[in-house]
Amino acid sequence: MRFLGPRYFLWPVLVAGAAMTVAAAPVPLVIAQPLTAVQGQLLITALPAGSRELRLDGQPVHLDADGRFMLGVDRDFAGTKRLEWVTKDGRSAHRDLVVTGREWVIDRLPARLNPPADPNAPRNLEYEARREAEVARVKAARASLSPWPFWRAPFQWPAVGRISTHFGAQRVYGDVPANYHSGMDIAAPHGTPVKAPIPGVVRLAAGPFMLEGNLIIIDHGRGLFSAMMHLSRLEVKSGDIVAQGQVIGRIGSTGRSTGPHLHWGMTWHGVRVDPEALLPPMPKDQT
Ligand SMILES: [Zn+2]
Image (cartoon, rainbow, N blue to C red):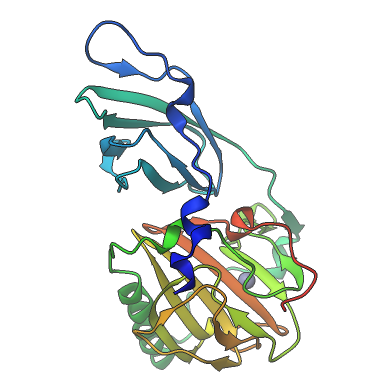
């Protein structure tokens, strides 16, 4: 159970309350210094221990007893969010979360390369039915809200290789933007082991799906999920608990893929976040 080792407990805690202004008067307690995050970030931070009832723009966010919590910021969100909570001594408090923009990799291409779909083309009902079933399985795999603390572990690289596409990269055809890239792509030879970046419970290990290929979805707890795509082989099954660094599959090029690589996507309560921003510098090799 590597995730329960000393490293887990010694992980430094950033106490957001360090710079707070404590008013002499009773409620509300206003933390003047805003918290900051960037677009697409999974922010993992903490309030003072004993804080409770955390809300982000009015929506409840899980808070551990020691004050640690996470929240995801959408890639296209611009502006300020509001955190509200109840302090250990029962006062209500709030603090702004200021989100700053990021420079995304944008590929501008001529409109003719992505012509609009022909409205008179016959529908491929077989494709549509199959895809609908796949999407339903992916959605079901991410539906659980488990209490696991796995999300607190420091991240490690699932595979080492060239990052061929970053999170958030986007093609724009003429003036029509395509969907942005929802994860990070790590290019590595076919068969390279893919390791769990943090521990978790496997919610789906199946395929090949038409787009994702052979796919593993891991539940890290409290609404945080990893999806590992395009695998040539699955080495875990649904329901398995995986330790950090455990081999879960092998790199491949199944599904919609032009060469062997791992696509690693992460979501927090459905908000897509950038895994790369959570990683330490890339190690020289996997051993
Ligand atoms: Zn990808």
